[in-house]
Amino acid sequence: MADDSRPQLKKPSFKISEKLLEYLRLHRRERPLPVTYDRLNSFEESCPLNDEHGKPTLWDSVIYNRLEMGPLHDDLKRVYALLRTAGDTSVLQHVYVDRIDYCGFGNSAPFRIRIVNAYNDNADYFYIKKGDASRVYGLELEHLLSPNRMNYFTCGNSLVEEHVAGIPGNVFIDNWLQRPKSELNPVRVAKELVKFNERCFIRLLGDMRSYNFVMVVTPDFEGAQLRLRAMDFDQQSYEGRMNFYRPQFFPENRSFALYCIKHLRPETAHQYQREEQVAILHRAAITEDKLGSLLEAMAQDQIAPMEHRVELRQALAEHFKRDAYLQCRTMGELVRENLETIRLTMATAPQGTRPPILE
Image (cartoon, rainbow, N blue to C red; front, side):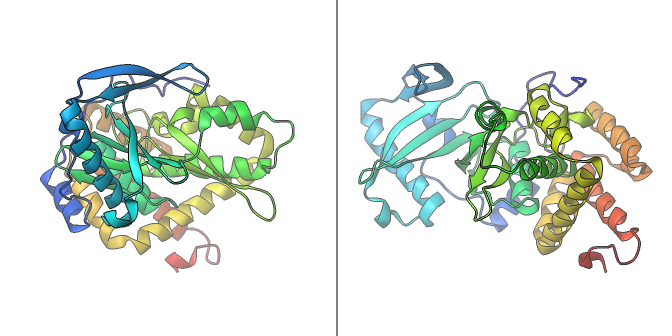
C-alpha cells in the first residue's frame, strides 16, 4: 500500500470569506458569543494532562487569572447553553466548568471545555477553536451530505463545536477489530467502512486516518449497529493528491482495509459504494438550496494553493474519465463536479436500475 497520502506541510488557516460569512449568518451559524478564542488564549499557566492510565496526552490544562476565572466559567456555561438548550441557561444551573484544556498540536489549536453535571457527575465537552474556512466548509458539508448532524457556531475568528462522541478508530482497531468474539457483525463493520470511504472521497474530506474519526456503536435487536463519524475537518479540500481523500490508503488504516478485503467480495463492496452514492444524492436533493449556496461560496473561495487544485483536478479527470474536471478552478468546483459525476453515473444506468430521485 503506497503511502502517497500524508500531508507534506502543516495546512495554513484560511480566513472566513464574506460570501461564506453571509451563508453562516443566513443559517444562524454566525452569532455573538460571550467567549472567543482570543479570550481563552490569554491563559497564564499550563500543566501537562495525563490520561486515565497516567500516560501523557497532547493536551495541557490551562489556568487563568483568578479574577478572570469566575466570569470566564459563567460565560462558558452560556456558550454550552447555546449548544445544548438554545441558550436557555435556567436548566443548566447545576452544571459547572470542571477544566479547560489546550492542544497546540492541531491546526486549529483547540481549547476543550469539560462541563460536569453536579447532580450525577456526568461530563460533557465542547471545543473553541481558531476560525478556519476549510474547517467550516468541512463541518457544513458533513451536516448536509452525511447521515450526521453537526452542531457548531462561528463568531468572527472563533469556532465553537460540540464534542463528537464515539470510539476513536485507532482504539477500535486495538480493542474491537481484533477480538476473536465480538457482538459486531464483521460484514456490517466492513460495509460502514466502505460507505465512509466513499463519503470522504465524494465530498473531498482529507486526512481521515484512524485517529481522526470515531466509531459509534448502537445496540440493536439483531446485534450492534455501527456508524463512522469524522471528527477532524481541517483538511477539507486542501491537498492535491487524490488518495489523500480515500481513507483506505492511509497506513494507519491498513487494518481496516484488510478487514474489508477479508469480509467483502468486490461485487458487494461496489454495491455498498453505490448505496452511499444514492444516499448522498438524496441528501443533496433535500438540502438543494442550502447546498447550492454553500458550494457557490466554496467555488469562489481559494482554500488551497493553485498547484494542489491543478494536481487534484487532473487526477479526478483521469479517475472518472471526465474532462469536465479540467475546467474546475477551485476546490469548491471540484466538490460540485464530484456530485455531478455520481448523478450522471446514476442517470446513465439502465432503466429500472436508476434510483427514484433521478426518474
